[in-house]
Length: 195
Image (cartoon, rainbow, N blue to C red; front, side, top):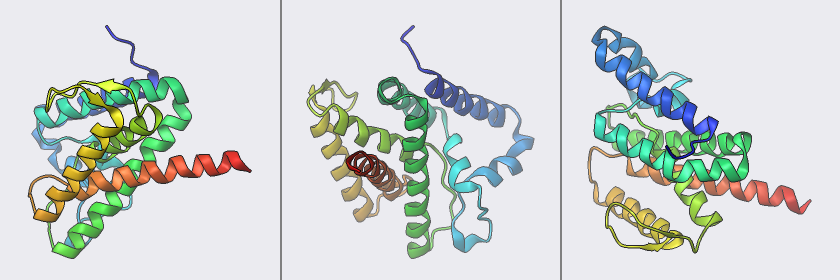
């Protein structure tokens, strides 16, 4: 079994556990709805949702790919930074992803809730590309070896393109918001070291 550091492991267990709980006990749907990120114009938004939505996932594939990404990118970042700094970056990414999604849904008038830690994962992806820009990685799609910085640039550009063209069902601007949160946090840390 590959090493999974404690914060990443706890987060993966929490996400998988909640997915199983809500799948097995449909009577808990009201609780699941209360934890999802609802658009501001629905009247269902609550202040805890910009954090809690990240622990929920819509289907097994959504859960699998997010947990795979947490393991692939989060494990190494947590090992390098430690649990505290890693948690700060992940929280910043999840929160800015939520803000981006709330703004987007307000502008377009969408009433559907958002779930998943994808925004946080895109923040980790950006951080990984900044920390290890020349590391060669082999993504699942496309299965072509490439440097981490190229991979991050391609995924960022794809999210922007898909968001602008109006591809539905995926929170593309939340993903970009997560990347922005990671970038802001890393620049904050770098600024603090110069003082």
